[in-house]
Image 1 (tube, one colour):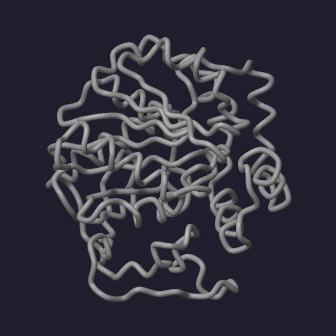
Image 2 (tube, rainbow, N blue to C red):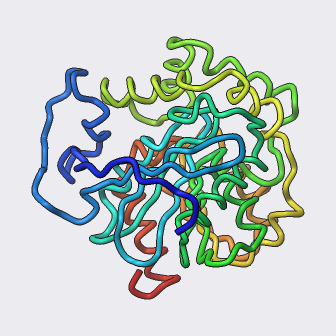
Image 3 (cartoon, rainbow, N blue to C red):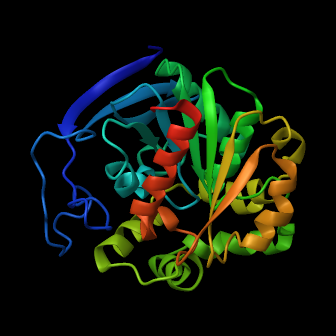
Length: 309
C-alpha cells in the first residue's frame, strides 16, 4: 500500500436493504426512523483513510471485499455520501472506495486548483496509494468527466469505466450558459430549487433532500466555481479517444442536466467501446433516486469484465 494512514474502523449503520434512502449514519436526529442492521455482514465496515495528495490529504472511505475495487467520484455539489445506498446494495463482498473531491465536504479546505485535471490526478493518486491492482472508476456527472480523463491515461489496473449521467467530453453548453449554473449552490433555497426542478424526477424524502442540500453547501467557493466556469466547457474529446477499457454509460431517461440526446451526440461518438444503458424513471441524481438498480448495473459490469468480481 502507498502513502496512507488508517484513521478508524467503525460499523456502517444504514437503512435496511429494502429502503432506498440514504444511510442514517448521516441522517440521525433529522426525523427519519432508524431501521438498523448491526449484525455482521459483507460491506458492513468502512475504514477511513487519509491519502496524501498534492497540497494536503484526502479522506477516503474504504469498504473491503473482493479483488476488484469500485472507485466512486461524485457529482458537482455531492460528496462520498452520494453513493452510500448504492454501495450498501452491491453484491456480497464487493469492494468499494468513495471520497470527497478537493474543495468539497471533508476536503473543503484542501487548496486548489480544482479543475478536472486535478480531480483526475487525485483519483489516480488514491488508486496508487491503496495499491489497487484491479479497479473500476465510477464517475457521476462532473466526476464522470474527471474519470474519463483519468481513464484516458491508461493507468495500470483499470478494468472498466462506469459513467453515471456523465458530463460529456465534448461540451454541450457554451460558456455563458455554463456560467449560469454558478448560482445553483449559492444558498439553501437555490440548492433546493435545483433539486426540485433540475436534478430529480421524483420528490426526495425529507431527510435525503436535507443531505443533498448539506452536501451542495459544504464546499469552498473556488471549488464551486471551477466547474461551471471551466470544467463544464473544457473539451476533452482528444483524451477520451484514448480510453481503451470497456465503458458503460448509465443515463436517466428524465435527466435534464445531461439528456440522452446530448450523450448520444457529445459522448458516444468520442469514447471507444462505450455502451449506453437508459434508466427509466430517474433524473440526474440516479444514484440517490434508484440505488438498487444502480448497484445491479455495477455488479453486472464487474461480472462482465472480471468473471466472478
